[in-house]
Image (cartoon, rainbow over all chains, first blue to last red; front, side, top):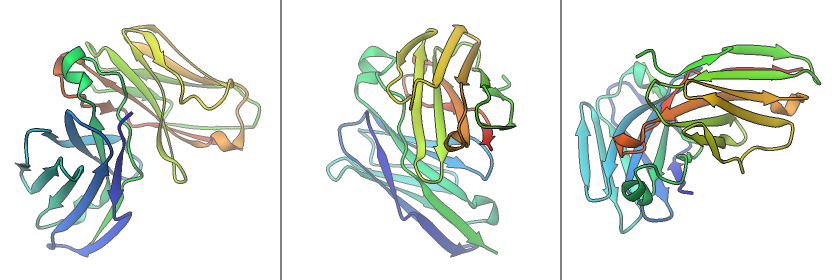
Length: 118
Length: 115
């Protein structure tokens, strides 16, 4: 099954600064997704980028995808204290487009723990 | 929709006891997943169901773990007997095939502590 590995493991920045997290994966994808997990809560879907897209924006989030390098980055601009959380990437295999169901559950790395200092 | 609902949110039990975790997926979703999260291992996929049928249980750590999905709106994960190393947060997630994106919707998790 697919797997995303996030980098760095931990990131601490000042409020107002931009935060960049990276994700690497191993095989072909249909799409790549980023999730956020606040302390003590479940994962929440943030943004999805398809294999034929190179960049996507959603509010203060910007995601890039480089399929030749099998990597993605998540940029959070003008960070806020509320952005403190763990961020995970996960990939979806191409089969999900053909079968409509896919053969795998998403697999996640250990995430990037982001701390925004006030 | 209320989202994926898990119960209990917290469970403290003693070694050797049976533990049952419950999950109600989002109505209309046809895939259900059980994950376990620990500091050491991160998020591990334990088992998933499609239309109530178990598809892949290769992530289930031992025979002490079992999962069922008797109908489209309910699933259980059972540990019998429980051991301290089973202490973790267990997440249930669901998704809809028709969405064609693979996006998962997670519950808030069940935090299990085995003493």
